[in-house]
Length: 177
Image 1 (cartoon, rainbow, N blue to C red):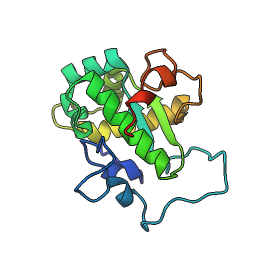
Image 2: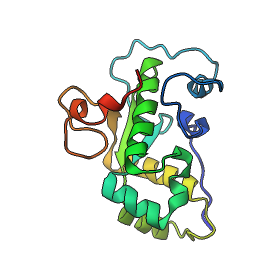
Image 3: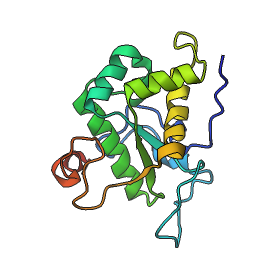
Image 4: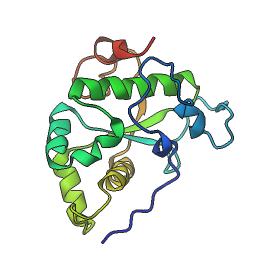
């Protein structure tokens, strides 16, 4: 069995479902993401991505549906019931992340086939392995191998969800007000 070494990932402590309206009776999940509870401050406009930065693994719609069929537990921490709900949850996370002034998120796009092949390459048994941890490790693997895209997208850039539509015309309007 493969042992997954989890990197210091501030997103790891964020439980789903994410707070969509920006108000919650629970303690603010993002407050817990910072080690000292202080807002992130940096003079660096262009922050380099590294293993210590959070990596957000995104599954485009077709891939989301395949992952949901093959390994539904991979998607459970997100707390989404459908593709549209998945997009709303991730956009809420992205919006709240940006409002906190945290460093850019690093996004990678996964595929069900690629994840399955990666599990095989790692010698992981999908029946007994922690698939959520393996998906996180797969995301970091993708970031190391092919690079990551910083979120949020710039104006006019394609949406993070993989629709091919501009961010402004796709998921950005899903942001909580």
